[in-house]
Length: 491
Image (cartoon, rainbow, N blue to C red; front, top):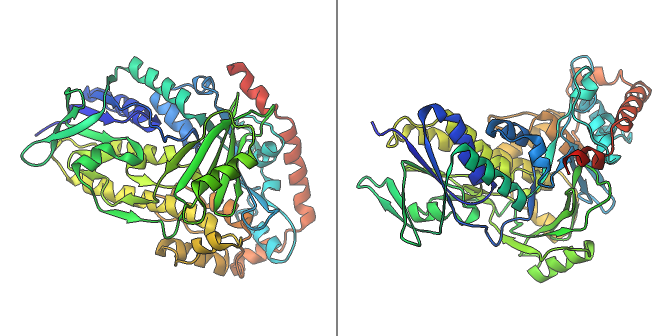
């Protein structure tokens, strides 16, 4: 038996420090010694992130208070608004919320499907207090007592540098050891397992299990094994991102905004004292200079020098090799459209806690870990792809994103939806049925018909029946304080 007593995390970003804190806390009864090799800030790191609501659970798991998160300049996020994804003036919202209330046990979005199929103008955001509040730049946390005030959740907009600084301090207080340096080489045992990591200054850091959290560079995994990789670029051709800070809004809405462009999409996300902006695009359709010019034209008040990232959509088939595991973008690269950049690393953390090996030489856990993380990654890929597959926007780039047949699991999901309005969920999906409903209805993707029993129920509901619900939700949203006021107590 070779028990795992020393865990070494390589990386300097949010995923590295979150993994170190989470595993140190989750496995504290095993007296696990956790060391982070801090490789320093990456020149091409994004300016920040918009997250999924799962970020709140992660903060609770690692002992980070929401007030401390907000002191980094973070803001709340009730959803994402997508503009021009179908035509020039189109707009739809994807809120972190249910849509309406069930109709005799049937999801309310079925009513909206039939309304759209029969040509009646109605929108999912009319039936969500979170969506209405976001449009009014108001925010309040969910409140128990009524399904209408408790059926939503929220996430965050985070600036990378201050957020990482906060996590680093939490890790230090928890007893995580920090070593600064650049990874130079690995030293292996006779069976191929890594025993120590050697830094550029000659220092050696021993360990039993090693995590690569160095992002797209995958500094550790590339020294251990090149690895077989699934390439998704034929479906997701965006491979570049410019990002920067810009001036703040006085009372910004608690939402992320994307705007479809000629070869990708631009984005805006508020911070307490600034705004984060960016342009995600395909270099096959737009040069870096042209993409930057478009960003500056859209947002002329940039505060910082824009950062350029390059990435290639895809994933490692085996993120766990020997006693080394790729986390986050070291395991999977995906454009940030779905807001899952930090979430992908969190999935790795949770799965590793469940499958943490008793023996550092055991590979049984690695096989299952690789299977589960592959399914998680494919599900995130599919939800991201659906933004491109469900819309009707024209142009060379947009038509290219739809030219290749969809992966089988996504094709089956969309075919079933278009045939009868059913939304099916497979194993290990991050996004729930209502998330798909927000996306597909908002994109104008409609079924040919509805299931007979569903249609009979929906036909009983008239537009007049749902007007009181909409009015009540508007009043609830108006009773919430302005988003900026919700942030003020935290500086």
